[in-house]
Amino acid sequence: MSMKIVGDPVVVRQMVTEEKRAGKRIGIVPTMGALHEGHLSLVRRSKLEADMTIVTIFVNPTQFGPAEDLDKYPRTLEHDLALLEKLEVDAVFVPTDEMMYPQGFETFVAPGKIADRLEGKMRPTHFRGVATIVLKLFHLTGADVAFFGQKDYQQCCVIKKMIDDFNIPVEMVVCPIVRESDGLAMSSRNRYLSTEERRQAVVLSQGLEAAQKMLDAQVDTDVIPVDRVRNEIHKTISTASLAKIDDISIVDPDTLDEIGEIRRRNDDRRSAVILLAVRFGATRLIDNALVVFKKSEYEV
Ligand code: AMP
Image 1: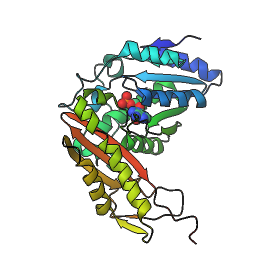
Image 2 (image 1 turned 180 degrees about the vertical axis):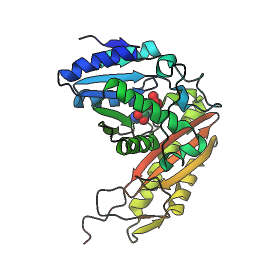
Image 3 (image 1 turned 120 degrees about the vertical axis):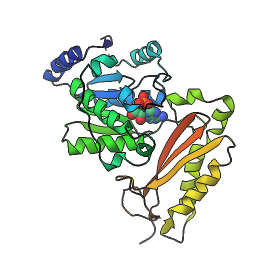
């Protein structure tokens, strides 16, 4: 069956209604296009877990602030569609701004405190726009399961909270961060980096690795102050002359609340998540890692 490309929300609705009546489980992968291997990993996962995979491509204006790069955001639709066709995606939903936000549109989702911190501090209306478009896409596509990347860690937390708070019958699957061979997290924004910036950008993932290594080396303590970990990351990132550190946050993995220390755990819950935001010239890169600080198997 060939891939359907649909722009009209009414047509998407009709298409999925038929499929759902036939008992199909619908998987949705929301994207803003400019697709790379990170996006494609979500698509592959959906192909495994759903009967029908719908990829949405929409550069959502309401999640960009007035001073952000909406007009500059890369748009590579032909190339995106060719990649998705190769993966045998069932349908691609590519609406226009007017279709998603017709004249008179005025209702927005208002995420709570999970959206105020970290990225939300820098971009005050960002997650309101994200939550609103994701809710619309859930409804339009009748999604049973939705695939998101850990790359945008706070985004995943905001959406998970919305799903819980609004009792939305969508299962959320968070997929691992896909990286370039040197460790840089793949991102549509990496293309803005100069050759030298690109070379140095590896310090984000190196900083995260250094933090985990530091935890692994602590054999005689169960508690580490986050400042020590932050300093270690700072040291690693500062080796890049072009890097300007915006944020190194070490927080609770569920609530994103600040924590003062990382404690050794003996359950499966991660002790902390480290979130980085680093600028290279005009390009702001983000990366994150859930850190492990476990009781040794040999300890009693
Ligand atoms: P975007 O097009 O940037 O809005 O991203 C669409 C989806 O792809 C989001 O759920 C992202 O978290 C995910 N994504 C972006 N980059 C990566 C990556 N390097 N690895 C895994 N998922 C990613």
